[in-house]
Length: 465
Image (cartoon, rainbow, N blue to C red; front, side, top):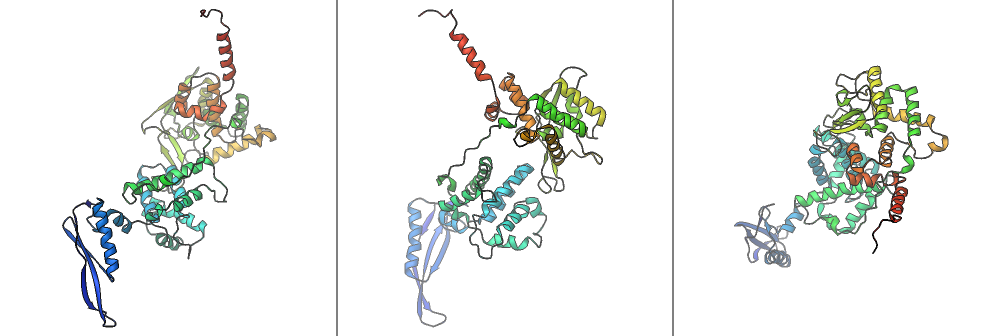
């Protein structure tokens, strides 16, 4: 929108004529004005309407509001005239984010926008079921790859057509009640119950970003959410200490894996002894490993293999995608020491199972050389948990997911006195995030601190006052 302040408003002109149907005398009233030397005009059936419109032009001119050179209207009126629908804007937001977003982030954006769109419908007349609207938005409208492939399939086209015509405009977002309704929808699960705090925060961030993009494009003057007093629930990012296994429990679980699925023993050992994320262990290649015959080794992590689902990655046919390390540059490498038990496990794994042609250590068994799937290692872990843990323990969060082995490793390091800065470097965290996430898993240090303070207070060599 190109803005000019060179504006002149002329007097109203009356044009006398006759009604085409009745032939009776009839006048129309024309308002004319110029913007940057270009003449604009609008015709009204009554003088009162013409005077009202001219008064708006004069008021905006006196207040120093810029006029759009294309439409000739004051900026607020031009923005309202050219306002996008929410559906069109959400699609444009997806397209803007797509090239630089990882596959999981693309899925997260699509999920959040699909949910919030249900609160931004202009009418429910002729509307498809909510479940169908969410499905179409998620699998087609908010997936750039599928939209670029061509028109929607026959089973999706009617819903796409209805949505295109029946979402509110961005200008309607100026109403705080509309924004509040959207935020309330984002805070609920599909069954109507309240979502987890982290889920609400993630979806709210996507919605906020979409509206911020509208402000960036000058489709909105201010961000609508800034005027809504809606408090995001406080998220609890801390690790549940009940999920953290001790060394004996970890070894029992890994022993069950060794007995039934030996090709994944080293995989779970990486999570426990080196605090790798599962996606980092899947990505590990033989050239990343320094494994001496005795003593400590070294892992140099260079990426992660994410399970993304077909149609969300840069390769539309792939269901997994190799990415950089989390929160790191594409070329970043994170060194992690490998204690002797892990070195032995990895050396045994390489001797027994070898590696894929690309060097990857953990691949599917029996066919091909693709990376081991999330479904496979999750299934193996659930089976090991049923065998290694008592019925009472199985009802608790103890080691419920393979990821909990990583939590156990980081907690163990912290409790054994490894400096937080060193733990953060090995685990791929910032120190702030590390201490926030693992605060509840650090045990015994308060007692040690009390003993040090008591010893200091009992010293007899303090100088007298």
